[in-house]
Every structure is written in C-alpha cells, then in structure tokens.
Image (tube, rainbow, N blue to C red; front, side, top):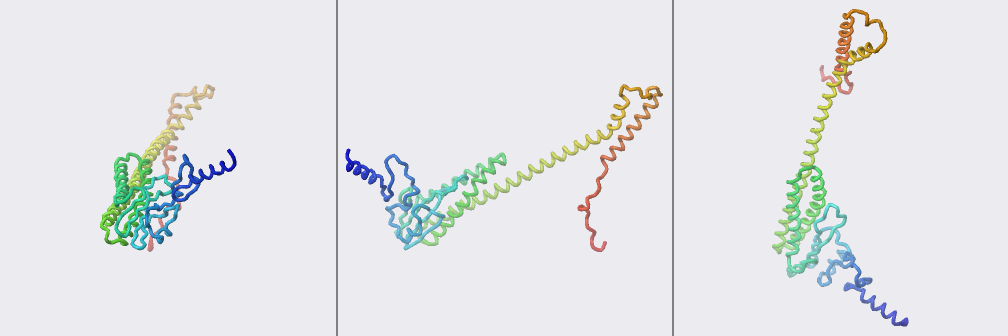
Length: 291
C-alpha cells in the first residue's frame, strides 16, 4: 500500500471518529465520556440567552433559568453518601408549554418522576430509621440523609423559582408542593435521626457511668477487706516463720494478745482508708453576700 492510500485511510478513520456534536477522537469500540458532550441536546431550540448561562460540560448548581418565555430547569439526581459529584438533569419548557427531558423524552412526566424518586428514597430511609437497632445504622443513615436533604432543598427552591416565573402552568404548582413535602419530610427525618443518636449516646454514657460506679464500689469493698486483714496477715506471716524467736514458749494468752492487737490495727487501717480526703480549694462555695 502506497503512502497516499495510507493517508486516505487515516483521514477516513478520523472523520468516522467525529461524533454528531463535532467532538473528534472517538473511534469504534472506544468508550464515550458523556460529560464532555454538550449537555443541551442539539434538537432543543433553546435561545442563546440560556445557552450562554449554561456550560457545555458542567451542569452547576440546581436552578431555574428563564429567558424569552423559555424555562430550563437544572436539577440533580438524588446523591449518595459517597458521591463527590452531582449528576445533572435538564428539563426544558417551551413558550407553548411543551416539556422536554434530556433523558426521558417529551412531556412533564420526567420531572414528576424525578421528584417522586426523592419521595421514594425518603420512604425507604424512614423505614430504615424505624428498624434501626444499633447506633452505627443511625450514623450510616445520617450520612445518607445530609446530602440528600440538601439536594432536595435546592430542588424545591429551583421549582419554586420556576413556578414564580411561569404562573400559568398548573403542573409546576403540584410539583412545587410535592418537592416541599419531600424537603420537609427529609428535614424531619434528619432531625429525628440526630436526636436519636444523641439520645442513644447519652443513654450509653449513662450505662457506662453506672457500670463504672458499680466497679468502684466493688473495688472499695476489696480495699476495706484488705485493710482489715492486712495487719493480721502480716503478723501471722511473721510469727509463722520457722525461726526460734522465743515467743512459742510463752502462754497461749500471748497469742490472743497478738490477735487482738492485729485486729485493732486492722480497724485503724479501715478508718484510714474510709477517711475523707482533704477538701479541694476549688470546690469551696464562695460565701454569700452579707454572711
């Protein structure tokens, strides 16, 4: 094959690799990065005043853009707890009242299904909250609720802005109310989850404090027993050594004298163990005025 034929073949492949929006470099079998495509479908007759307010590769925050009777809603899919980026969706309403969804075709049903997806997630998370048996489940639930609640709040604000801009569309009124209910329920669920975590944490801390107090009492009893029997044990050990000390030749009265003295020393050590420690100067209550 000569050089001209090779160049012609390469030119044909490059031409085939240009997609329908004019992005070169895509060859058969290569995965297309859809985020690099123009996010507004080319079949939509959106005015340039809206296009210049929307990037070609990024969706940005959730909002409603209104220009020349056209409404473009930029919303996000429900985020997960580990999602660092947001997947955007576009809903376009023409001045004639026709709706288009960049992923679902014509009609306002796509926007309604999008709002209902938040409501379905809220119902599932409520069930998870009601069935939570340990605090780790509640922590996982809160991690899911925080970004979801924030996204639902911004979605409601965007739909409310669209409702104020297009007052004659009754479907926007219903969707606005549904988005408000979703936001409110998620807010309440998030607040209930936080309160339940605090309640269970406080209850667990109280239980730990009770167990620590019981262990302290048990240790205190052991200290009392040790104080009672320590002198007696020490003296018995001393006189129990196999050494000639001369006391073993005396009367049995000497044994009882040593035992009584040992027990008396035990009670003395018990009083010393139970004795109050010196008061802390910081704990002194300041005198009242006029005292």
